[in-house]
Image 1 (tube, one colour):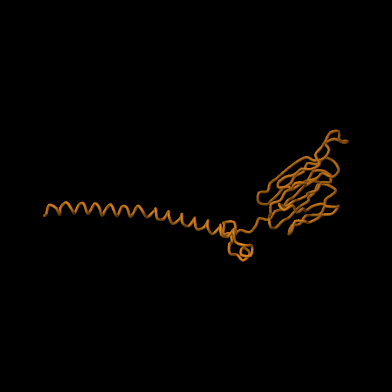
Image 2 (cartoon, rainbow, N blue to C red; image 1 turned 30 degrees about the vertical axis):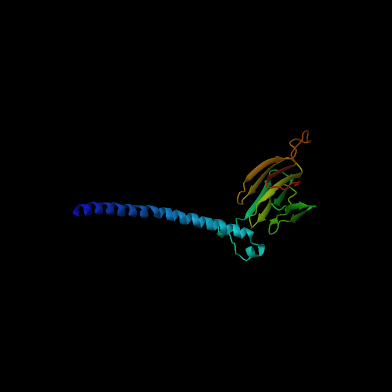
Length: 193
């Protein structure tokens, strides 16, 4: 009888050790399952929020909780300058097609919440556009009259940049075609000087 007991004890000890190893190995798998479940739940909530009506979204039921949600918008200032006495104009369009700039001889602030400076007709600029909300815009720079001008446009907003171009005749009187406008960024179809 002692012989049977001697064999049973080591087998039982090995079986117990194997069970402990299996339990320890399954803990990371359980954690991975929990994170996969959390990601799945988040995706389902997002899908449900997309289906809710506008009234529920306005009430805050489905607020976006991204990293950028807590940061205030970056204001946008667009500045146009040029190097001659030419009459150059800055026209700005938002993604919805609203226009800010010269229309019928006077400045129109057609982009809600944003302002456009006065029209500089005697050269050198600057003409500026300021938008505290920092929305995405496109710019159209228009040559109206006068000598050739090298224009510089600077956009300080998110995704903005620094742009240069030459506009107007290079010779007087002009003997070849010259550029009357230059556009950068988002411009709606039909935007023109």
